[in-house]
Image (cartoon, rainbow, N blue to C red; front, side, top):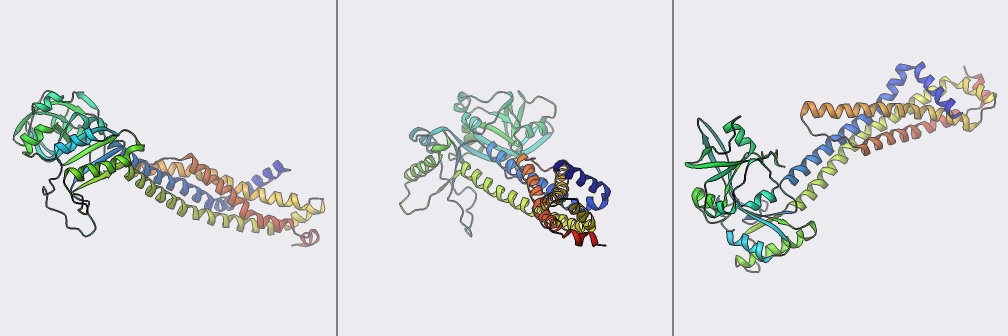
Length: 405
């Protein structure tokens, strides 16, 4: 009886193609919208996570100056001179749970090679910076500890800088001018793409820290200190230990505000993940409203079908069909409509997500869980909205049904 009811349901769909298609349209749009919207939300979430992860894992960043409170006037550039090389060395030497420490200075400079020039950010770094930020050397090499100690004028270029200055020429071994000083290119970094804030991480030039401080900037302080913790379990304790150590080193009174800021990228990633998950859930919930509209459409068409087939129901009951068989027949017809619409909706949703990804350039992630959930909801909607019409058909009096014109 079950499969016979399924076949009868499909025969009914074929007999009224346009009406069936219009009935399924709400389910198709609903399921497709849920799949597409969740894919966009997950794509945004993945992009944010990858961007933050590209900065380094288990990473703490110490910046000069207190964190900016709302309404606070930003201090003048260069006035926050609170971090020193000795601070970085103390963090590496005195604190447990530290894996790598990378002090950094940075400033924008005009780079010149032949008749080409390019303005970019020049960073003075140590060898640990490469490991912490997970940069790879695409060609050439990175400068050594001896190069750092001797204040050598060596540079490692990001992919964007190398492309704009040299084109198809191999930059390694060439000499570029940073400001007015000549630097020999010893390596080119592998590509990393954009950061969370949309900044090009490949638009950078790395030089030895001491070289940048003494020969370019003429400073003795640092712009930031990057610290990689040994694992996620110690990162919160390490953050507090850094605050305690630097307050002691900077001779800050008990009630005095920190003259530095320690940012925890793991905590930032967790917050961003929670935010993007909420956005994804919101997008899916809004799209799911159309599924309810599709369910109402199924109920409407099934009530019409019951009215049209009243005499048929009377004949079936007269021939011995019981309450359960009539109920099952109309319930199966409602589920067949929702299942067919759900399957078509999945196809349209996946196609829509891929179209958005290719046309708008957005990152989308097709979630099998979202597809399964949307399809399951469409089936449940078919059951829920099909119960009333099916029950109404099953409760018809056979004599009244046979007399119905």
